[in-house]
Image (cartoon, rainbow over all chains, first blue to last red):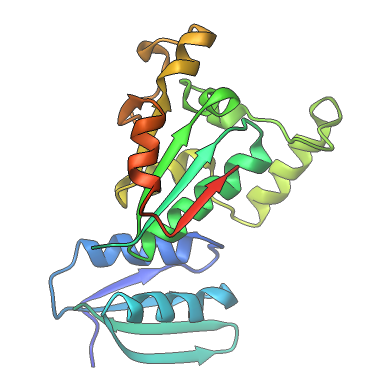
Length: 75
Length: 138
């Protein structure tokens, strides 16, 4: 699935990856896909847990070395 | 109805402002409604130009400790307090300045940053806190 928007939070630490993800999703339309790329370890799980809890769909999570990417479909 | 968190911000040291604002951001990002009630020394955080000039509560060592920690935070890419406040506001955090202590300290509305939503008393805080699932004092 292709992303409609990409958010790069590489180099950012707590709480920015989570906060920037939420801010970005707030500005997107329902059904659109957001790809987040980052390298802050704990944020990978936190972002997917929190966004799932908010009702968004976690489409995919990938690891590439220390980097990770998450695909989220906005509810 | 969204869950709510309230934080009473009582302190004006950098190492206490950070957790207060990070918790507010985390809760707001997770869909909670957040109220921050600033009172006593906490009011200093709401004065214009103050957020960037806070000191550590320990190991300040005439400012040397604080500047060392600031450098390390910058190296780790930790967001500034100004950025965290702006983010918290963007995610809907409500900022209340304690009206009574403002009066005690002789601080006027003009001394405060525009991010302050209202000047209120214990009633304003309690109305938000009574049904909140997390209430903290920092």
